[in-house]
Amino acid sequence: MILMGLIICSVPSLTLILKFPSITFRFLEGEGLEVITVIAITIITVIIILILIPITKADIKCYSVPGVVPLVSEDMEGLQHVPYLLYLKSSYQPCVGILIAPRWVVTAAHCFLPDLQITFFGGARKFQDFTGEILPYEKIFVHPNFTVTSPKNDLMLIKLSMPLTFFSPEVLPLPALVKNEIKDCLIHTWLQYQEVFGNPDNNLYSMRIQWIPDLKCKKLLGKKFLEDMFCMSNIEGNGQQCQVVTAAPVICDRELRGIMSWATGCILTGYIIVFTDLHSYSPWIKNVISTK
Image (cartoon, one colour):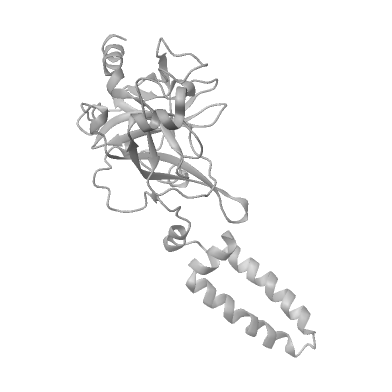
C-alpha cells in the first residue's frame, strides 16, 4: 500500500517509470533476449529508481493521516508554544513534556521511569531536521498522591539544571477556565511511521480534539473516570494503526489545559483520551515552582 501511495504521489517519478520499459526493451532487442528477461530487468530497474528518487513535500503530504495535521505548514499562528515541547524517552514508550517556566517541565507521573532522557528539538517538526539537545535535569517532583495502581494525580514536574531563556509565560499560561468552558483543543504528538523500505520516520503532528461532557465520560468509562480528569476524542478518527506517546499536553484557547494520562486506544483513531485537569492542580504546580 505504501509503495502504491508513493507511486501515485510522485507524478514526475511515475512518468519516468512508465517511459523506462520501452527504453530498456529497445536497448536489449538486438541481443535477442526473451521478453520475460526484459520484464525482469525492467522490474529491478523500477525498484532501484524508487529507492533513489527523493521524496518531495507533496509526497510527504500523501502520507498524512486523516484528522491529523502534520506541522509542515508555514502558517504557525497560534502555535508559538511548539518550541516548548520536549521529547521524554525512557525504558517504556515515550512521552511529551512541555515548559511551564524557564526551568520547569510538566508531564504525566507515569513517565517517570528508569533512564528518563529529555530532548529539546527547538520546534523541529522531524527528528531528521535537528538531532536534538539532551537537557540535564536537577530533580523530579511526582505528585505526592500519585500511585502506580491508579491514574489519579498522574502529574509530575521536572526541574531542569539550566533555564531555557527563550521561555515567555504569556505564550502558554496555566488554565484560568473551568472545565465546562472547554471547546475544541489541540494535542501534539511525535508519531512514528514505518516508511518505505522499513525506514522509521518520526514527525511532530498536531490533532484537533473535542471535549466530551463529564457525564458522558462517566457513562463511557465507568469507574475509570475520576475526579480532576476530563476526556476528549479525535474529531476525525480513523482506523490506522500508529505508535504514539503515552503522555502529551493539550492546548485549549492558547492555555495549557491538561496532560494526557491514558486513552482507550490509539489517540489518532477516535478513541477516548483522558487528561489530568491542570486547572485543579495549579496551586500544587505554583507551590512547587516557587519553593523548590
